[in-house]
Image 1 (cartoon, rainbow, N blue to C red):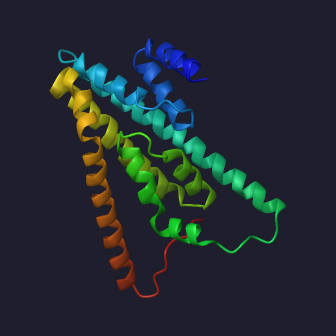
Image 2 (cartoon, rainbow, N blue to C red):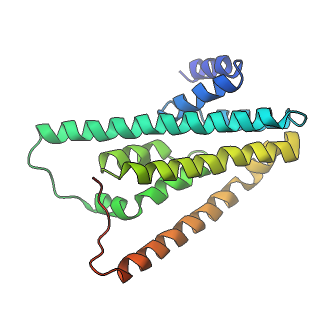
Image 3 (cartoon, rainbow, N blue to C red):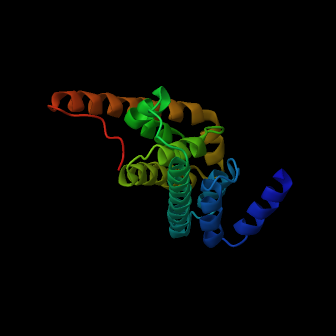
Length: 207
């Protein structure tokens, strides 16, 4: 199976930016293609010093494809969960994980979506966001922000460092993950403080 996925990835890569778009969508739908997309964006950018628009176009298409794939995965999980609920009555009381996810779950979506360090289980948390009825626009804003930072950042890194860009990410990937985790936790703390200061405020639980 792994060899088949490698062949599919190489086939799509041959189509340039359009292939990157399809590859990012497939990866975000749950097909495991670890590090292929990141390495491709870095490689295209490294070879585009004289034509940087190709690097930026590739990164933008990767963002669009990835966001589209994650939306489909999120929507599928939401509709599947609703169908299951209709067949099983009454609706169960939310468990601890569900309550925690309503308050902090989008942090677990943001960190793996923004950090090119495998393995970080983004798909699991995207499915959880859909199943636990996270508001769609909140989910979308997190995915778009995270993927834009990641893929556009990789394009910029490839243009700046050339072929050394991938080595830079390998050496500093976990440092980047820690940095974004600290940023996300700071935002969570800020949101909690603001929420407590608003009278009668309760954490959103989705539509």
